[in-house]
Image (cartoon, rainbow, N blue to C red; front, top):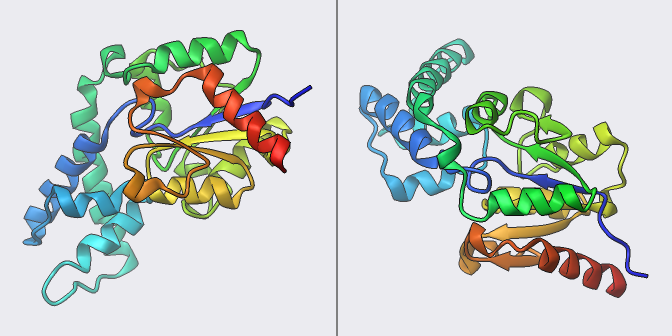
Length: 227
C-alpha cells in the first residue's frame, strides 16, 4: 500500500496569505529614505529570504553600494519591521489565500501533522490575525533557525521538532529559495507559481486554489513508488 506523508510544512507568505505587498511597501519606504530606488520587479529577489539578506540586496542597489556596520544594519532592519508591523495590522481571516482553508481542513481530517516553515519572525502574529493561531502542530520562523532558505534548516527543524523523517514530509512553497530548501531537505516539494521560476518543484500549480489535497498526496505517493 502506498505510504502517506506524516507532515505537511506550509510556507506562510505566498501560500497561507500574501504579505508580499506589505513587505514591499515597508522595504520601499526604507529604501526611499536611503535614496535607493527599488521597484516591484526587484522585490521578486526578496521573496523567501531573511530580513538581513533582503537589506543587503537593497544596499547593493545604491550607487555606490552602501557599506554599513552590523549595528547600522540592525537599526535599518528593525525600522523596516516597524513599518511592516504597522501595515499588517489590517490583516484578517479574509486575507487567507483561495483554497487554503479547504486544504488545511482536508489535511486535518486525514490526520497528517502540519507545520509552518517561514522566513518571517512575525509568523505567529500573522497566524493569530488570520485566525489560524492554533491550527498548526509546530511553527518554525526566522527566530528559530540559524540559516535561512535556501538552506533546508527551516524545513528540517519542523520535521525534527515533531520527530518525523524528512522523506515522510511535504513542503509547500511559492519562492525559488523555498522550493530549493525543501528539495535539499530530501522532502517532496510542491511549488505555487510560475514554471519559469519553480520548475525544480516535484509538483507545481499556478495558484493556491489549485492545491487539492488528494492530488498532492497522489503525487507524493507516485514519487515514493518510483524511489
